[in-house]
Length: 122
Image (tube, rainbow, N blue to C red; front, side, top):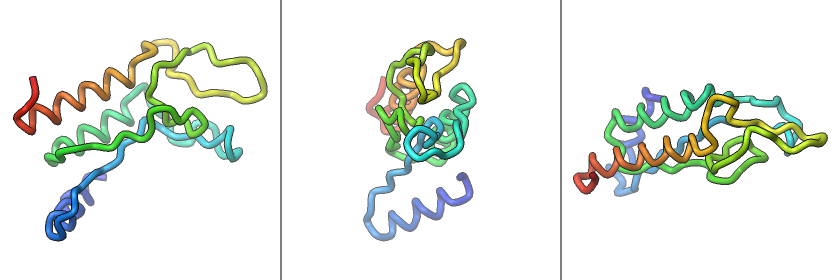
């Protein structure tokens, strides 16, 4: 990820285009398309955090989070339970050791960092 960011930022700047990189907490299309369950593991938030930290290191001004509520893709960041519903479809959970709002808290932290970098944060 880190090796393409400077070139992407420069390309956008030269063309007057706003650079808006995307981060996501993990991925699984198992329930929607039958793909591999937990295809891109969340690693207890480390996957998500590493993406954000890399972008912040390069001085990005904004980050798009994909997605707030996409449970079928395993990319949701909203508050959820570790007790998945019973039935045929297995659901990824945040695990037993993470609080239900863990990804919202991480996202809030990234937002505060972006605001501080822009000079209008806390």
